[in-house]
Amino acid sequence: MEEREGEVRWDGLCSRDAATRAAALDTIGQAVLRRSETIAPVAAVPPARAADGLLVPAARDGLSEVLARLLMLSKRCPFPDVREKSEAILSGVQELGIRIPRPLGHGPSRFIPEKETIQVGNEDTMMHTLFADSFAALGRLDNVTLVMVFHPQYLESFLKTQHYLLQMDGPLPLHYRHYIGIMAAARHQCSYLVNLHVNDFLHVGGDPKWLNGLENAPQKLQNLGELNKMLAHRPWLITKEHIEQLLKTEENSWSLAELIHAVVLLTHYHSLASFTFGCGISPEIDCEGGHTFRPPSVSNYCICDITNGYHGVDEIHASPTGSIPSTESVCEVEALMEKMKQLQECRDEEEASQEEMATRFEREKRESMFVCSSEDEESAATRDVSRHFEDTSYGYKDFSRHGMHVPTFRAQDYSWEDHGYSLVNRLYPDVGQLLDEKFHIAYNLTYNTMATHKDVDTSMLRRAIWNYIHCMFGIRYDDYDYGEINQLLDRSFKVYIKTVVCTPEKTTKRMYDSFWRQFEHSEKVHVNLLLVEARMQAELLYALRAITRYMT
Image 1: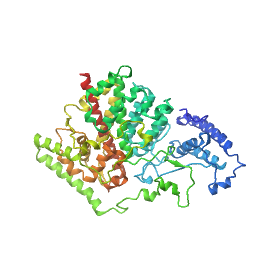
Image 2 (image 1 turned 180 degrees about the vertical axis):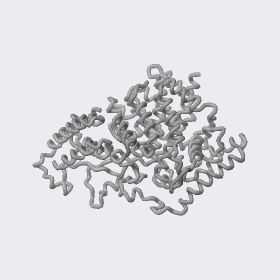
Image 3 (image 1 turned 90 degrees about the vertical axis):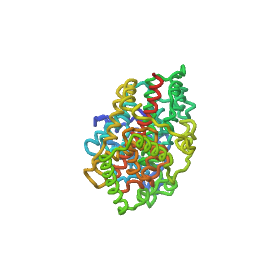
Image 4 (image 1 turned 180 degrees about the horizontal axis):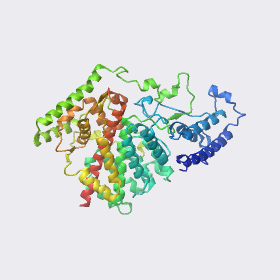
C-alpha cells in the first residue's frame, strides 16, 4: 500500500506477519524522525517549551498528514505492536519540540457513548479477525466498521461484499469504482465517505483533476450522473430509456456488465451514506475534522473546537431523557410487545381481503409522503462535496411537496429473489450471491431480545420496518397487511426512518435519541442495518427492472 508521502511507506503495516510489520515500523520511524529533525533541531526548540504549547507546527513537507496517520494507527490498528510503536514515534517527534495531533470527538459515533462501543484491543477473537481482515484490505479500521461490529455476522458479510466490489476482479477499473463511490456519497453530502474515497481514488492512481468537479471526469462517468441522481432520490422514475442512453452512447457507452457494477456501487454508497448519518459516524481520526494540532485547554477542549462543533463528552452524549429511564419509555417497550402479541392473535383469527390489503397499502404509502420532522430544513450542499455531482437542487423532498404520485411496484411482478438476483449474478458473477446473503442476514438477524426482555420473536417488527421502507418507495407485497405498520411504528420512529432513508444528511442526534428510548444502542444500529439493506434493495429493484425491460 504505497502512499504519496515521500519516502514514508505504509504497506508493510497491513501484513499479518509481525516481523514484516516491525521492519515497516522501523523504516517509518526513521523517515519521520529525519523529517522532524530538519524542521526543529533539538537544540533550537527545547522540549520544555511543550508545556507552553509553543511547539513548532508540523505542516511543512507533508509531515502533518504523516503524524495524523500515525495518530490513527496508535488508536485504531488491530495489531498491538503497530499501536504501541506509532505512539512511540509520535512521542519522539514531540520530544523534538514539534506539535503532534490529538483526536477530536469521542469514539466512532457522535450518537453512541464511546464506552459503549467496542474498544480496539478489547475485542474478542471473532471481532479481531474481522478487524484484521478489514485493516489488511483497506489499510485502516474505519468508524463504520467499529459501529457495525455490534453485529459481527452482518459485518463479515458487509466487508466481504464491499471488498469484492472495490478490489476484486470486475468489469470496472479500480479508480472508476472509487470515483463512483464519491459520486454516490456526494448526492447526500456525505463528506465522511467522500473523503475516504478521495484518498482511495488517488491511491489506486486516479487523476487528481477529476476531483475538481464532475465536469473534469471522463464523459462516460458524467453520463452516469442522471442515473445516480434518480437512484438516490426518485428511483421509480428510472425507465429502460435511461438504460438505453447509457448503453448506446457510442465511444462513451457502458457495457451491461459495467453498468450492473456501477449500479451496485451507487446503491451501496447511497445506503452506506444513510448508515453514516443514521448512526452519527464521526470523521476518521486522520481525516479533516478527526484531529487537531491545537493544544488542549485546561477544560480539555479549546474555544476553536467549540466553534467547530466539537463539544465535551458529556454534552455530546447527553440524552434528552437523561440517564434515569423514564416510566414512559420503560412502558414503551411493554406496549410495543403487547401490540405485537395482539396483532399475532388477529392474524390467527381473521385475514383481511385482498381489496382491503391493497387499500391499506395505498393509505400507508400516501401517509408516508407526509411524514417529516419538525427540524426539517433546507441544507445547501457545500461546494467541496457538491462538485462531485450535478443538479444539487434535485432531491427526494420535491416530489412530495408537489403532491406527485409514487406508482405502485408489485413485488410479485419483479422481485429480488425471482428476477434481480439472477440478473446480477449473470452479468457480474458472485455479486448476486454476496448481496443475497447480506440482505438475508440483515432481514433475519435477531438475538430474540427487545431492550431488557429475552426470548422475544421480533420477526413481525423487523418485517414492519423493512416493508415500511419499501412502501415509501412504492413497493407492495400482496401478502402483507400494511395496517400493522401504524400499530408497530410510532411517529418519532417513522420520522427517523424516513429521514435516514430519504434525506440522511438531515438526521440529528435528537431524532436518534427520540425513538425506542429504552432500547440498547446495538438495537438502534440493528435498525440502521435494516434501513441500509431495505433501501439498497429498493433502489436495485427499480434499476434492475429497467435493465431487464431494456434487454427484453
